[in-house]
Image (cartoon, rainbow, N blue to C red; front, side, top):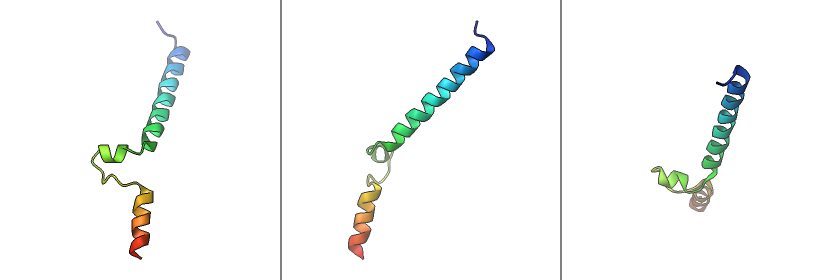
Length: 53
């Protein structure tokens, strides 16, 4: 059975791992298109807006 310190360390490790995975997923360029977004990243949107001006 795990002692309190061991359990705390595991929980911190799980939290750190989850934050790293979320940060990496947030940087993937295909994620907005896959989740039903418009499929355009910020650079494409900025370029289109600049051309309209």
